[in-house]
Image (cartoon, rainbow, N blue to C red):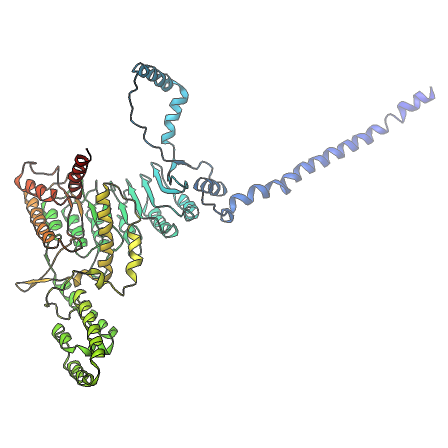
Length: 560
């Protein structure tokens, strides 16, 4: 009994408070541990990665790099990088037409399912579509369509696009560009590979009309499309000034698409002013605008001999004097003095003192052997030929220099070989004959633009006025669906007739010959207009595609 009394009195109760305290201590200790674990382990893992996207080294795979950089930047719902969808091949009827209803039934049943409806909306989700090279699957072109490109996306592009060594084109269609994001995009382009040549910004109207920034002097863009951007006459003025001014000229842009905008007569006049001294642009589209006869006449005027303004005449004389003094300082003294009479004939502005020095040099060189004298005469003859072909005479009234061998005129120019490969890297479409002709023309334009300033081209003097030969480099001009009438057609007929005569006289030599394609359809004149018919007949003989068709027909006939 005593053991039973002692047990409930002492032993059973003594351990219970102890065990309660111990269990209480354990629970408190566990609570502390649970509170301490997230503070010491989880936050560093969750905080370090998103805040340090700079630490990531891009691999050159756009899909992986873009996703990783977006995740590290805290951008959760980012667009996916997908291959550009290809159009389905045309339906080819099989031998048994009984298969067609079965296929139609399958398509109908599939279109009614929920999964197919969801898959159709995938097309409208924001994506970055890429065109891949078939050999190594590297990214060749990038297409972004229909979703707003913000500045943070451009910041991510500035890190993942430079490793793409084969990137050639970027196409942004209705991406909500602003002047700020356009500036960021332009700053991004120099970071990309040197192979990028084509930029398309369509459906991105800007109130500031600052598209001319894409055509800066340091720009490497060869093909630029600015369709459907609500570009008005002010924007056309900025673009015309970017093409060329009296002291600057864009030498990289080969094609410019300004279709589906709001350019009127004033804007077309600004574009024409930009074509006066531009010798690089080969392809220009002004289709679907508001150009009337006044703007059309301005465009036609610069494609045939036009009168220089007083400011241009003064600048031409300054360039002639500067070029002549530079060549005299570069040429050796023996070659200058060896044939002084020919130089005095070519340079009427040469001073009397230089003529006297040349006569003294002739007297001192009479004692030398005929062999050395003949060598010096050959050297002086080469220098004279270079001066004659590059149009380096001192007087603006001198005769037209020969241009039969442009390769000789370009000897000694280091910049020409560097300029040639940059012209032919942009993607080209169309007939093979036309594409090869365009590539040859691009190389000729590169040589001419590096060697001769347009103001130093041979000129013609009539009635006390100075006339330049006009822009013969532009090959394609599209003016469809404007507001041109018969008055504007007369100006283009005069231009086409002049260029046709010019190309006949220059058939044996290389060089730009003028328009090969002129589109004037769907304007405010009748298709049966006699002037329009004459223009079409003259252009038909100049179009390289129409010339290639008879050759293909003859080859097919001979093979059969």
